[in-house]
Length: 370
Image (cartoon, rainbow, N blue to C red; front, side, top):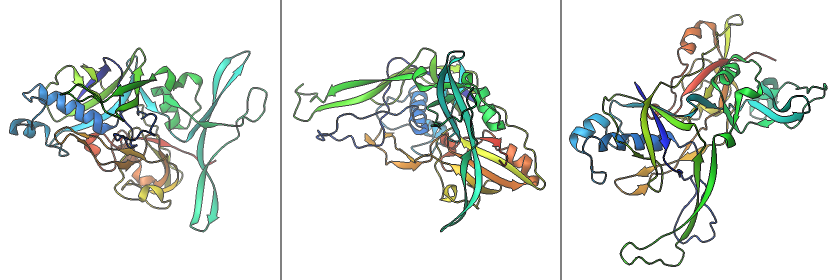
């Protein structure tokens, strides 16, 4: 397995799932997304590998390239991981939705984070059965007053921060990296031009949002199943933007905690670090298994589905949008204590559909009853 670091040579643009059609003058701006989806990064890497081995960048792949890199949605024997965010060479991870926080300022300590974990609360009887909603314990400030207004974090965790989440330990401000320290957005205005007449028409003006990574920020993707080397620079995202590829050390995942059984029950958490393509509706139902994992779901913190498509470079049209579970989603599960090693072996693996593309990578942690 090889890992490549992707460093942008300029701003990047990855469109979201909203319509982007010519003539829709009421649309003021098309926002981008970041990090890009696994589909986008896999497409960029396969194109770079194909170009380095004879593809002209326009026509279909030769039989030799298809035998090595697959064809279309068929990856052949290749597997990908990521994309993962790197900050000064250190891996960063999306904050789990079970982690709440609030920044406060004091004369002694300056600006710092107050953080807490959600875990399954008391059982509630509802019209759809008994459920356990995630609840947070009271958090006190330096004066002993309860802290109000804790929200989902808008940032990333360091490897040590994620390790503490998986172990159910307390976090500090040094474990959280705010998004504005990693990238900024820049609006760009463009106009469609006829390449033959070099003129424009009505409704040809558009506005999009680019992403500019901060100094020391890059992406990492892992590849297995080929010994080919990619061509530099690689096209990444929309508008022909480019990134420089170079081999780097593998992405370092935080260590999974030792799961301690409670009698014949073991409690563990599953958190996504890349979006997942669910094969069924099991992720939304308590009391059943999750994607074939051991045990039954007790509670969960799941974000809104994200619509992910892509670009078909041969037909020159976007791929159909499909809903995915966002990175940071987390499930609280109870299983038989005899499944301990089976559960730990899932740490860093992928679940759901399109696992070979890098979707559905998970980390295993522990949770305790309040």
